[in-house]
Image 1 (cartoon, rainbow, N blue to C red):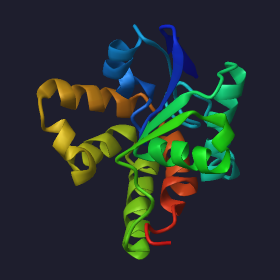
Image 2 (cartoon, rainbow, N blue to C red):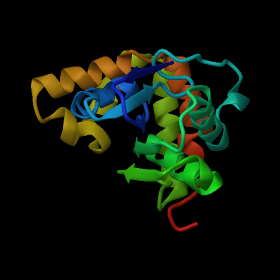
Image 3 (cartoon, one colour):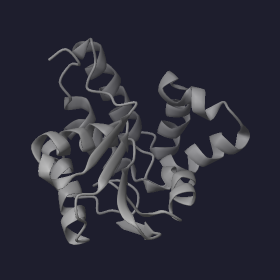
Image 4 (cartoon, rainbow, N blue to C red):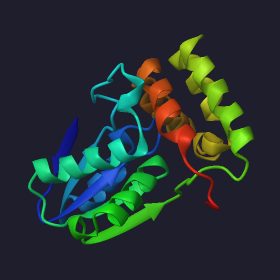
Length: 190
């Protein structure tokens, strides 16, 4: 699933884990007067397809998905920007296909944990929450986690926006993304 707004030089925005393309609403409003802004929901998230096969989720697949969005829309070397998981995707797109992009903006991007064993425990706990109690229990926990709490605690509107974005996903799609993409990132030092 993708959306376009505006005209001009293409700018593609890749969202963070569980946030969906909706996270970019403010940026779309700010840039659409000067740029052709494209936002999309990553595989397994938001309004995009949720393949049931766990093998359909991996970092190289997400990079290829972004490359295919660019090709499908006929974009000539767009600037790509990503936050968190999306930042990792755009960074890896630029490394694998430098000819495909004119510029890259990488924001708040995790490359994996300093402690892979602790990260694996965290990821497994999140998966169990999604596969057990479900998406709302996951959203409640995730909004209290330091990863999102700083944003969620800024205002009731910020919390509601994040809650809505997270719960617009399926529990299955997020669990598959955690298993195949987020949980398998190499450590920042490797």
